[in-house]
Length: 377
Image (tube, rainbow, N blue to C red; front, side):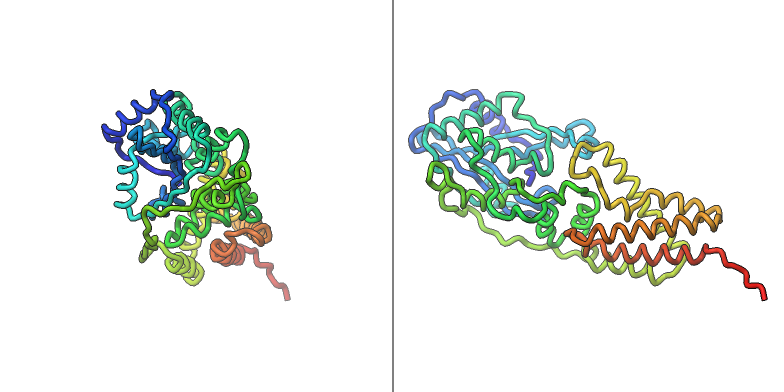
């Protein structure tokens, strides 16, 4: 979804400067403007593909790509800004040849759909792109669903056409979470991580276009002024996505670790497991309040990763059996509530082994600390 630019060549800078201040440059009647959809990669920023806009005008010697997915790793406090959700992304421009060479090197497919609009609208869109380059609108605050390289392209096309022509076609009856799941094939722990850190927003119905291939499919079905908006898809590069094979990043290590916790039946192992869950819960709470990413808010997974487990561990360490028992029972109730809440959620199966493991551990803790009533004969 996001395209990371590690370095900007001198050519790209000059190109950006030249085009950015040539808003009045008239396009020829042979000019073409198209949407580029780029294939999936195996880096975290490329899991979902990428969207860009190409402007090609041979008569004016123009063949450039406008890309809304850039950010700068040199930004002060980069990690903190990214986590908080106020990292500034920006639109950049590069030659089409540089763009296509980069994707060829990464072995990622590139597809093109020409926008079948009038020359006046092509000029209007071209001017809007260049105006953006030379203004503060070049920068925007990235949002995973609402503002990314794809949604920004949708917005500028609709603004050019004067109405919401490009809207999602199909797939509006499933949640954002369900839409995302297939993109994590071969990346199990990334899939697990997003499953437990995302809150209620991604459980809403996916009515907005926010992924590149959603836009590609919607353009194929979109009409404007009673004519198709997108031309026939042209393939520049075609690669089969290679699903990585990892000895550790898979469901088997996940199940092995959880099985070890269950079968070990060891007090120390149980405490370490509960400590990990509680620290993750603390992290989720902090991120929920600190981050501006709406996807992280209202995270009901806190019922599984409860920060209150720290209190349970404290009472266990000081050997307060009564309160250790009470908190273990309380968290078992949390688990039951969480399980019922998860029945219709897309990530039920991936967290179910953890729910079962937590149930075993909490029951063991409760049994160890339950007061035995003496029998008087």
